[in-house]
Length: 359
Image 1: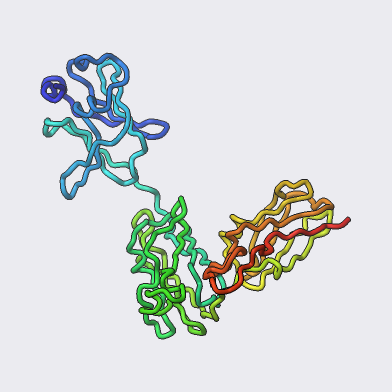
Image 2: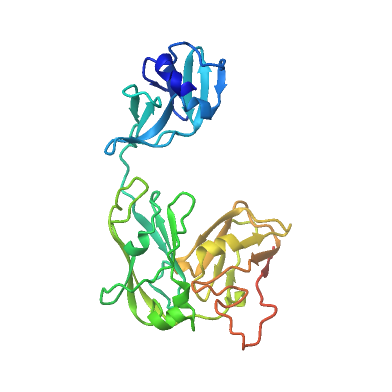
């Protein structure tokens, strides 16, 4: 019904007005008759209001307007006001139009983002220049948000010592952090596990005692569609495969002195997965509560330290180690990544570590 009356009710095109708070803008349409049939001042149902006018993303090249944006409509003294649910995308053009009425629209282009430094690869885990040949994954950190795209699995290359790309090494599942600055890049598990058909057909992605390069090309795009600032190459050597359970009995502790804020240091015989370690391991104090402080990893993730907020009190402590704490090959404190069913099971592997800080 509203659509049929539109030509009679509306004269001037919609107008855009800035707002001091998000979403930062509202769109207003002055009704020529001053009212809508059956509607008083106040909120107008979305389905009814979009028959009067709506705001959509405008594609200048195709001359097309997208679906109506979500938001709220309100009638205020003869003016129909639309407020989007979210801020408009930077640099994008939007069109406010009345269905069925030509040449009575208004366009608005949201301000572009200010120039940003080119996104860079800031670090890669594991950081070591040698890794077990049955390495499960790399973790890439970027200086800014990246664009999610399955193209990354063709862009990021694993190259052998001759510079030849290793064929299809990745598990093609995107695993980004919430802010799109961390990418977990898994090797295809079917090529890592012994006896799996894919490994038998294509071979493992890494061969012991061979040299490799992980190449993150400049063509990878950030969230704004811009390429990386530069190509990043991580060179490393594959060592023998590691297929034993991670044994906390082999960890070595360097204890702090009571009454100081010296760090507690823990050394490992082989590198651990830092993300899993931070998630799975916690330090409990003499009162049984978590010790407040900050952690950091040493060279090549083969050591870890905990610096408390306050001085260490005398007493008994426990380093509680979760079941999923793992090394670079996915061997956890609970079991190896590949369980040999023919071998005797370790029913009670040692995990937690207790220690005493004396007076």
